[in-house]
Structure formats: C-alpha cells, structure tokens
Image (cartoon, rainbow, N blue to C red):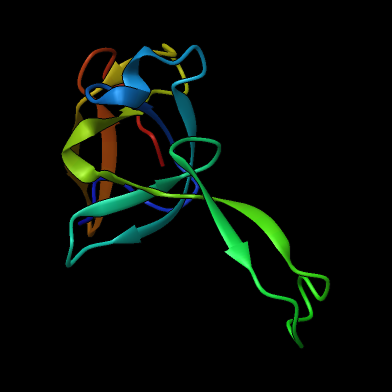
Amino acid sequence: MQKLKVGDTVQVTSGAERTQKANRGKILAIDREANRVRVEGLRLIKRHVKKGRDRANPEGGIVETAGTIALASVSLVCPKCDKATRVGVKVDGEKKKRFCKKCEATID
C-alpha cells in the first residue's frame, strides 16, 4: 500500500523549500520510479514557451509550473492533529488503512 497519495497534504522536511513560509501543499503527481513528487505551490519553475498552437497558452510567454521534490523530503500532515507525521498501515478486515503515528487517527 502506498503511504502517500495524490491529493494528500504534505510538509517539506528538508531542502531549500523547508525554510519557506508556506512549506505545505497538496500532492499533484507522484513519480514512483524516480522517487519524486510534485507539490502545489512549491519548487516553482519558470519555462519560456514559444507562441504556437498550444491551446493552453497560444500567445506564448513565461509559464510557472511546479517542479519535483524528493519523496524522502516530504512527510504527510495529519488532518486531525495538523502535524507532519509518519504513516503506518493497519489491516482492518480485508482492507488496509493508513494511520497517523502520532495520534493514531485513521487517514482514509
């Protein structure tokens, strides 16, 4: 079972983004092969896009997108205790459930 999923709120625990005021965000995408994660509003990268047929940006210009952060540098924020925590897995019948290691509340 995956301990982090798309849509989870995470906090950056190490690296340059740790010192930023807003070091929390939602996961946009996870790359399991490279062990990297895209977090909303963190590690912003500017791309210079040419004018073309692209429907998202037909005039071209400078586009800001979220870059990737190492998976080991982020930790899940518990919705109940609002702290960055490690994630455990419990077997409940035939289903696996994630839980917070600090307050032991189920996450989903």
